[in-house]
Image 1 (cartoon, rainbow, N blue to C red):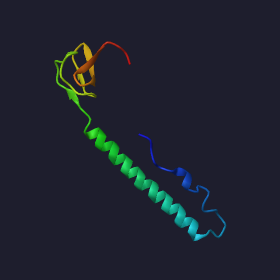
Image 2: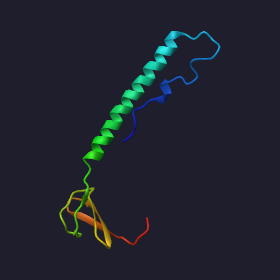
Image 3: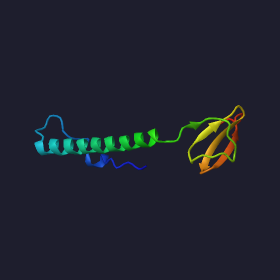
Length: 98
């Protein structure tokens, strides 16, 4: 998921110390920062929603032909199973190092 936050529209050099800075510059920067925070909040909420609905670890026993949906993970004492499509599991030896 690509972010829609636009840091380019924030002037990081503003305000300039020791100068009389235009209040419009403050308003523009504040608005840009506020909009980026609002965008970030929406993106974080979307990610949290996805994570809260992601399939969880399923109970064992499971095999390469067990029912399941993509994204589910199962395990046994010797293998880790990852469902890569509906009822389509791949098996990885639990002794493999990642």
